[in-house]
Length: 398
Image 1 (tube, rainbow, N blue to C red):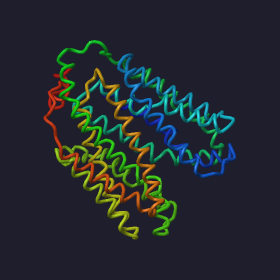
Image 2: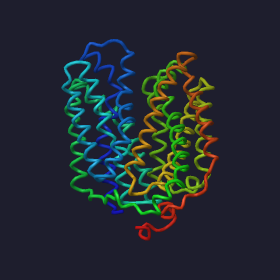
Image 3: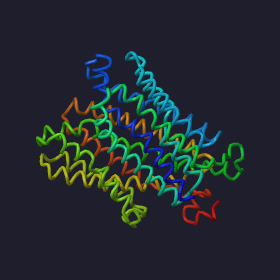
Image 4: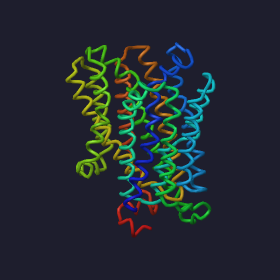
């Protein structure tokens, strides 16, 4: 893979993700100021609407990407985001704003499109590392987007900000068109060996799908209620609660940019099982205490467990992905992740209503442990070319 392609795709994704991840925390402000909607229940529904639409559309866009090219699919996703942001910024009523958010989900999907493109220009261990960096891009946007949007809202109304920020995905599309080379499409040119190997690989994809769903469910379950829970439990300021919320993502980024990312601790076959165990333990540590210092330790452990899980799952994805079906593969995984996030948010809300604000942490721990049992199951290794490529030099497999 050319050394310049990965930075181009990372910067492109990060730029587009700033808007998609930065605006949802301010939906309550938009609904109140622009549409005079004071019912807080609506905020949750608007929050998950783009996610649900992405989950529905991702598999279809994945097939389109394999047919017409992953670079064009990535450009299409970025232009789709820009169009949705413009509509959201101009929406005269609540219904139009909801349509704009639905279009954001239906036409977007830049993470899956970016990953699919990377899978056509690299493979094996290089692809696994690229996917780790893609997660780093998402974590960075998640950390910085609310800060950036919050600062801009002090000068521009929240809804009008959509119009200004629509420029970012357009710049991303221009960047990909200018600097990322077209990929090779293989639709209709699969060999008989590749076709007959699908059955052997399907069980690995089924296992990966379950693992992805369980991990993403556990990760998202604690998101909606963590900050108010910390504030009510410890009396922490909003700034401290926000710092604790962001800490696991910061741990991931620190490991990613340091030599630790090459540590053998993240390369072993037991990495995923260990990561899930640490992840579950971190939830239990947080839920069973009322001390800020103990929660701090729990969040650090959560960052370590999250990093191990991401690295292991990205490695497994790289081993199973074929370049000729990269769009469908990442489209399906993106859809699974989005459905897991929706389910995690819904079940966290139900658990909070039935018990208390610590319930999502216990829920996340239980799902982590259930997912851990699946991680023990290891089917026979697939015999696809990409699996063999994972252990060889990339130049020998292309």
